Image (cartoon, rainbow, N blue to C red; front, side, top):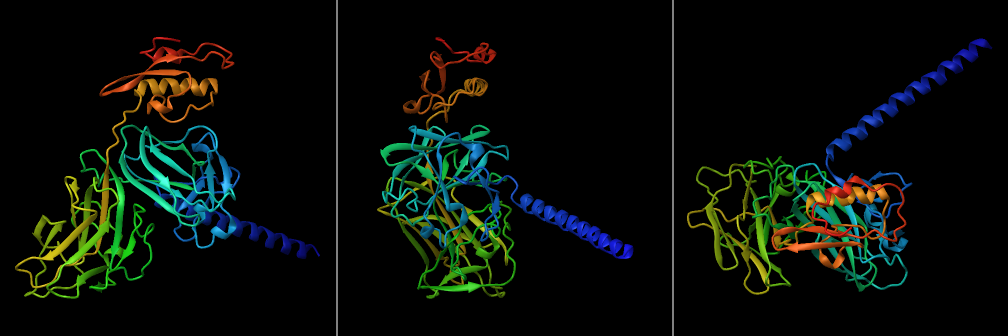
Length: 453
């Protein structure tokens, strides 16, 4: 009998030991996954604060609740019939029925260039069937007007932005056409500053195309180290080339690193004397564009073969003649200044150079429109002081986003000065009737332009 007790005791001890080992292994695996996403911020907006974070099944991206990044708004869910076929981070949303401007704040320390993505899916969450229209702001500057076409379509806005400071505000602004909401915010550091060649403007994604896609599926993380989203793009007049071999995604040391799976397929014209032409409709003909074209030679060329190309934007010659740098190696050609369009289309044509024996080839392309964010943020020392005052007194109200900018959303109780090219300064602070108790804060001394208190 005692022997049996020892036997059961040994078995239970072994089970506990095995559980500990497996738990430790699971923790190690989760840490490895987290390391792969170092610097990534992936918010499931509206996910209840007591819900566990999760890895989205199709991408493996790790999402957390937005609870610690925003002070206002209501947690909602899209209706179940709109969830089918949609990624999990779109199932919840945060709506903002109160205040004109509601803002998320992010402290960002992984360099200064970031991919910023905002995701919207109405999903009739309020059961009213009325699609709202509202504005999306980045800091004090308007980024986009969000105008959804139907309840089941996911709208994604993406920007590559160089931060002037180590923090960022993403704001939703009520323009009187329905309650603003947001489903997900995704922020990715571009560690090499790879797109930072654009005269300090921000780049609003217009198109990112996986040319001659074999799978006809959207490609993103983990295939793309920066979690860029590549959309399949094919044309009937193109012939598809592909390889199973690995592509050196940074062959020209430019740092762009387009996903290898994207670069393993390419298009050539079926007519060997033809060109590769892309034409995309542009709603605003005043837009200017930056273009990044990615090439990889996936055919082993013979000694008597050559592939030389010229690139035209619209009717104008842009670049060439040039060769791709080596077999299975990526070459990226990109804009160093913005270009305008003629008419209502963005068009690019890749043509065979005069001495080339082979037709042109194309693997992938990224096109961005220029965003000039001209509104200046409030003086940094003033922001630091007023944020410490807000935190110390526990002030909620509508103190969100930039204190002074834009002027239409000035914080309650503040007045600011606006002097041309200089950042706005806080010159007046009125906290009367706010029910404050306790000592006067020393942080007030740091508001060095204050004229009235």
